[in-house]
Length: 516
Image (cartoon, rainbow, N blue to C red; front, side):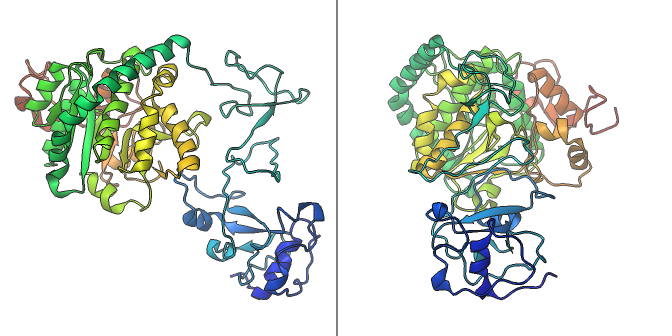
């Protein structure tokens, strides 16, 4: 156990940090009245910083939770560097005596380290990035990080191919998608995509009053069911994905899970009839869904996939506008138990929207990596404003192939701009696994199949198309939709649910309920 020095010596040690050579003897005590400026920090910087400390990363992020899926602390990334402005140096915080191992003192408690801070401005940076430098500039405040890279002049255009860094080149302003290995994944919506977006958005807005009046009593009835607090489980589905919808409902029924809180938006009459026969509350609006495809997407990001992304945005927007909390989910889902109590009672309080972690922690989806196929959104002014912007970003959805990138960018901006609070449930937690675990953390899925963990749901994301989803679900022993004649089109759905799942092996290199 490290020995603790007296609190009265903290201010002087923090003031001397980074500019004073390490000393073996403890610093001379300094009274609280003296710590507002100075020490050995240069006069030219004293309006910015007067000291620094190290703080336990886990304790700090527990106190200042910005909602990102936090990577586990590890060697060389287990402390936070805290820079003190004038008048913020703590005077009663004990620091660890690390025998001069560092010029920067360690205060393990974030509460004690920030006791005199009126504001904490938090910056997240990628560890282990060779060649990265960080500059803090005294100036009228910016709420964005401005990134400069050494790349060829003119490579900031949207048409640039992958560009490699070159230390002989001068610095150029670079977008967040341009990484230190030089890859650019940024493109811009084309004019025709923007025109099409405007047409679709105009059509949706022209129908909004009609949709509002139609859906108000329907959503209110669903929200009042099940004894939960104002929540509607929202899904949208077309004919091509309807077998996944049917399997979701059949699997829930086999486990005795109540489906009365689900409101299914059917984009075609086939799916509308199927959902009703399955016992779901369903809504179909011919004008709204007239241009939506019936066929399933052949692959992630194709034209059918993109069209259904916009439908998913519209339905959440309207239910949010009606004053309800929303649990939105895709059809490729298995419920092991009702997830609503988790979001209504168990999650950390104070957040506006909670997402399943997609697992893809890349620059394109930083800092949240939200899986937009499963999220819980509280109804308030902040989420209403967020969705009012997302419905106008159809050209970005078309350009990127999904609403995931658009949602991520908007949430990051709205967090800074309007105080939106986003919480992503970390992929390392056991409650909400998805395709990331199936593909990258197969030991977790095998433990799940063996009953060693107890998740709420499983989301069969990270797949190419519907057929692959079905094969994976069959191999997991989670396919409850009959292959009997007549069940393919799902008209007689009540007779097509299986009491016991259909198992079938397809892939020897993937997790399986039984050996393949």
